[in-house]
Amino acid sequence: TEQIKGLIDGGVDMLVIETVFDTLNAKAAIYSCLDYFEEIGQDYPLMICGTIVDASGRTLSGQTIGGFYTSVRHANAFAYGINCGLGAAQMRPFLKQLATLGEGYISCYPNAGLPNAMGEYDEGPEEMAEALRDFMERGLVNLIGGCC
Image (cartoon, rainbow, N blue to C red; front, side, top):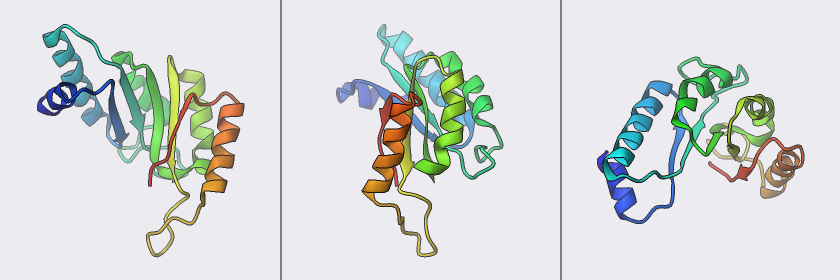
């Protein structure tokens, strides 16, 4: 709650709960946000983004994207999405699934591909832009950005 208060006192317009590997942590953050909103008598938009860790389509704690969404949808966030963990091309099937489940906007901010053996990212801006453009044109996402 201290972090939420500090962000709101600092003038934020929205709060993002992101890089969610474990929905129990996300639920704690959601609870704190909603409790603080009630305390101050004002709501702020929430965006909640999970992280799929590999081609299995699961979070680190083992949830599918559908399980993740079901676990956090009670927050009535204005946007749900996927960030980090994968490059844009690898996120596509999971975004497609989330787009059919989501009530609200769908966000996506992928890594620049997957890290190579040196821990660097080989995907350039052109490749990421091409994948994100495809997501937008197909109506899979409403909000886009970049992570690692």
